[in-house]
Image (cartoon, rainbow, N blue to C red; front, side, top):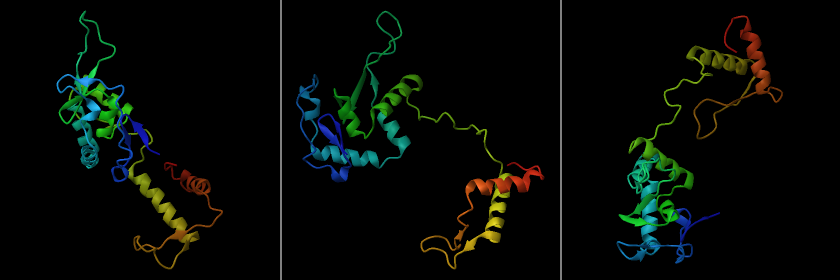
Length: 205
């Protein structure tokens, strides 16, 4: 189902039609520089072409593109020098400021929470790519290569002994025929047998 974004309706570009491209004249201030309502400056072709260009970008490129357009109008502190709790951000599309956040969100194919997250990142770190908090960290449950190969070796041996191999590999897949296990073999049962087999050897379960 389409979701409304101000004067437009957010749909996939392929299904965006003039019927969904509806004009909304209320709740839109005029831009003092051009003296025209912000959602009156863009036609249907402009919206679709811009959406296609944005969707063609990688995630990091798209986010950097958006962050370059986020301008903190008020600054981080108030006139009295106190920390500002809510900063007003100027949003721009095609070089012109727009007063509706939903118009900006439509043009750049972005949701409300992602936009707020990008605004916070720009205020705290400047114009730099966002980095996931877990990057560079080794998970506590990480398994070393030797343990992985031990598990693979066990499964292959189990399949050779009790599996039902197919005569040929499925079309469109690799050349290895599929091996089916019996219906009474569950993942839990297979894991229990692995534990039993390698407990005495002191290997990881």
